[in-house]
Length: 178
Image 1 (cartoon, rainbow, N blue to C red):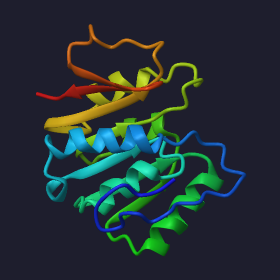
Image 2: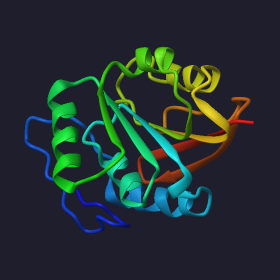
Image 3: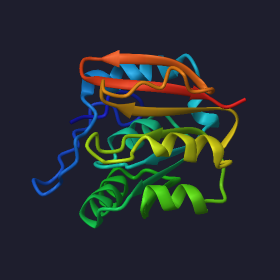
């Protein structure tokens, strides 16, 4: 796993073997950020990464100069890895939060310009995070929410669905607020 672009481009991220996360593939991540590069001004974005896993997506946003990145992960081993990796890279304005993403979304008082969620594909009820984010006041007006999921899910009939991007087995549903 590597950081695709930006300040930390090419830096390898080597999670320990005891991390059970399924990181977004470099191919899917690179394509996602090519799309995002045409949609958002990274330096003007406060970013929330839910179900952060290895922190791969968070590091990409930070590498591109995001104003702030909050990475939410419940697993203490994963959270500690994210925290240590961000410190090792010297990333500023990076906030690893050890919390249940569903509860965090309900209690967070901050708003974000971009929210990314990569819940485990086999997590029952993971799709509930879509309505929790979009209905919870976390996303700023004109903000963007990206939900990574398997081919089994379809959000095209959701009122705030904007577009689907597919990269192999990885699906990104984009939702726009406002």
